Length: 135
Image (cartoon, rainbow, N blue to C red; front, side, top):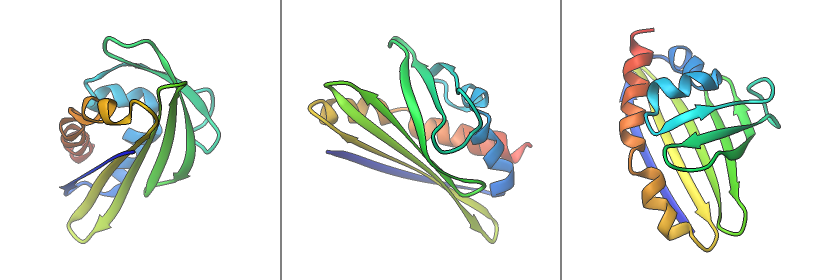
C-alpha cells in the first residue's frame, strides 16, 4: 500500500474552493496533468466518469463520498494493477482554509504508481488555492 498526504493553506473560503471541485470540468484549470474529465451525473455519491492523464489512456472513476464545502473521495480502478483512492478535504480556518489531498493506492503496482501519481499534486493544490482566492 502507498499513502501520501499534502496540505496547503489559503485565505480562500470553503465556499470559494468547492466549486472548483464540484464542477469537474474546472479540474483542468488547476490540475495541469489532466487532459480531460467527464462525469455521468451530478457531483454526488455514485456518479461515475472518466479522466485522462497526459500520456495515459482514459480511466474510469467513481465518487464514493461527497460532503459539500468539506470533502469528496473518488476511486479509480486499474484492473489487475491498482486501486487509487483520492480524498480531498477542505477545513475551515479563521483566516481561510486548509486543503488536504490524500492518496491511497493498493495493488501490485502501488509503490511504483504512487510517486508518479503524486509528483505534481502539490503544484495542482497551489493552483487550486490561487484560483479560489480570485473567485
